[in-house]
Image 1 (cartoon, helix red, strand yellow):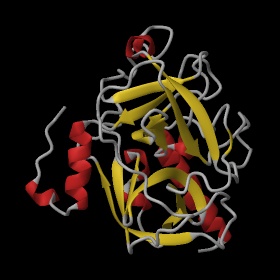
Image 2 (tube, rainbow, N blue to C red; image 1 turned 90 degrees about the vertical axis):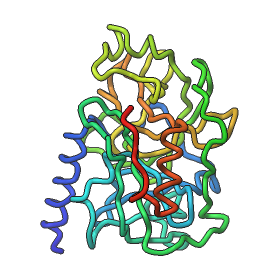
Image 3 (cartoon, rainbow, N blue to C red; image 1 turned 120 degrees about the horizontal axis):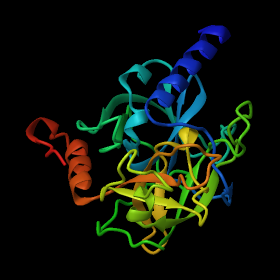
Image 4 (cartoon, helix red, strand yellow; image 1 turned 180 degrees about the vertical axis):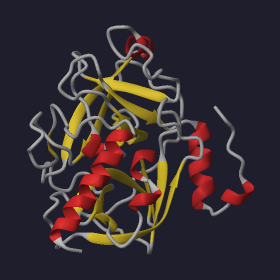
Length: 273
């Protein structure tokens, strides 16, 4: 693929993501992760350019946002890279083709409901100190507001549209915000409606968040240290009162995830929420 065609292809992917509710590409208020941290993080790339985040939950499966699992992304230039802190690293990197991209069957771009997907790798990852699996939650109880959480990603770190994504994996501290607050007129105003299957999280000003370059990344609440949610969407990274929204890993979603990984999709009917 020529450099010009690569650029055109990447631009088309970015435009597709933008049309799916991912409105910006930056991580606000984050910091570099410590070496050795985030070993479960996946960089989803096309034409060697990072477009989304994901979480390794099994040696052959990555959990991400449905926005990052569009069939148009599949093919020769669609890759998952594991084992890196820096996007430029290659000594510890493991690269994989994606042989299946499976968004939740009821994902709705307008409402952002059921915003999760699974990517199946062409071979099993080699688990080591650089590549580890993050456990799925044992408890799926609603996360209490005020809970302290974190999220990770390689998204942009400034409001400058011309800036490059962060080379070093970023970590951001977040606090869970009341669902009622997130749905209020001064926040999302029910556009879209923040449901029980979502987690609203940010800082006190509603500014700290993850966006397009970080879509699909994990939300990890510190009390459990397990995967709690998936970065789904956010509006206006440079605006206050628009916290990030994460898909909460409820019993319903965990059942779907485990069924897909066991290869029993044909025998499983997903109930409409």
